[in-house]
Length: 298
Image (cartoon, rainbow, N blue to C red; front, side, top):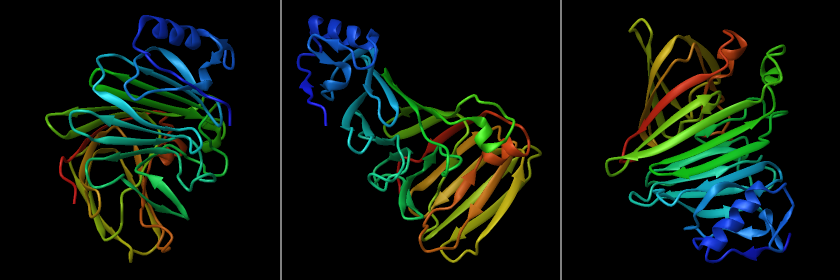
């Protein structure tokens, strides 16, 4: 582990200048005797210029503006994870940017609106609700951006290539770009673009209702006893989830093909709502979703 210098008085003009220089310097370059990667970031630190805070296993670039309603409350380089807290509501987001080999936590984002992180067991690993890995055997996160500014917290995870999912789709990196806000006292909202999975709980039971482009509806309920199976639904415009563990959440979408993927193994207590087949089967490269999470969980 590299020796780290504690970054104090970051809000002072001198420290802000040092942070700006570190952000502009090449990764690993020294700034005032300490490189950007050697700095500890106090949770209230103002980092107006993007600062590289990690390079392994992904390059992580972080910034926080003075007016931000969000605060960095945990940065675990050993576990390659970040926790951010919305100060007025105390809602948190757990952000993991590597695979499960080091700590059994898979990459992605797990909101916590008051009943614990929205994550579940998935083949021996703990996997978050918003899961950006489309091919577990080959897809890894290589670049992460975390920006805290005003009411918004933005996370972008990118890596791999579209070719991994759909051969011939090109070498452009796959990505999930998510911006979170809290409206009212505790209404968490998220806007995501790119391709990612959503992993609701199936323990004890979750009901999903889809509204399609033609106005028709499809309803499915999943439990630990539901048999293994897959189902495809086209032209989905809204998804309403009544989750037995996480509570109610919903999102509007322009998803051209949705896949339900459920495995009855007791090693999983979540199921998949997948977006990869919208690329494989329909050629849709970017899906836009607008999520709303109920302020009260189960």
